[in-house]
Image (cartoon, rainbow, N blue to C red):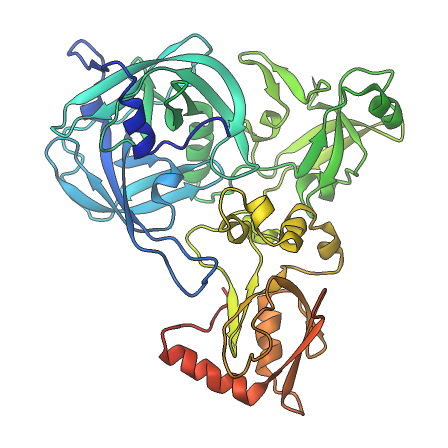
Length: 498
């Protein structure tokens, strides 16, 4: 991704190049120290390579925007896997523990509320109104607070309004691209962005080299808050397709759209996603959504922002349960299909695309460590995980359809083997996908645990894989003795099934 995550090191580098921000003057309608609040969080991530462990606690500090009702808006990334969250008055230092009233990691937004009544942490603070009027060319203010509580405001210019990634891979929303110099501050992980004293977004990322940043915009914030306020949070819907542009004349002729303009080619569909349930097929070409023509690059003309990705027609204010009309071409014939928008949760995928605030599911049996495959597990191999992680698992993540067609709900694999008396000879076996245990087809980790709970007549469990070594055998009695020893030597839980 072009931008670096907004973090302390990025800002410290930026400090060498940036100009001094403009202190807030008394003439401004609103001041940072009057409408933002410090947020202190303690995060503790789960380990995916050693699933029974958690990492060391790490602190994170940012700034939240004060909303009506003593609520605070921050980015979800600010409190991911948090064990403690606290609100702190920017000037007088009053503090109160906070609870997460709502969170959406795809939209990268969260709302905090004080966990205790009658707190003084909001004394003298004023709620911000939200403004959706931003367009390219506007000047916005990024708000920060000095250690002494004084407000700091830095001007940034909106270069363009686009659609881009927030926090979760593959999850894209409306985005303000801005340019300006930002100075390092202690609370610089997440920052409110305002225009004429009204909240217009939250800073997502900053590139010290280019002095450009991405801002999560007010329209997304308003949609999130409206959904949260009705008491039944549904989240942002997704269409559930991957597409190809149709710039190539051969592809257009092959798809039967050589005599029409625009259109995007449906390459893949998410199983049980909105498009899949509505009857969209691979090879269909989508020409328009709700009457908005889609060009060959996948864009449409937004009346306010100009060219935007078609995805904004689905995630730009539409709600779960809404119906949209797709004009498509299938086998050179035009068709109209109504699609009811749904949201596919991460746990509904064969391979979870993200896992926050919950640990990886696993079973340890006699030293054999089994897990459900997730994208965070693959990402544990580092930034170059696509080439460093086991090839079979990387391929399964990229092409899950064959496994879904087998009836699998999750992909259970043997991640590693601890050297124990029960696993002698199997120490080198790892990263292989489980197909059956004792003749039972394994659809998820619960199936695996249930299969191991039943002792075979000969006392030997038979574990089958989809590749070498194909089959291994482990003794039930020896494995259960090893399990007791593993608990004594520091592995507190031998399984996590939920």
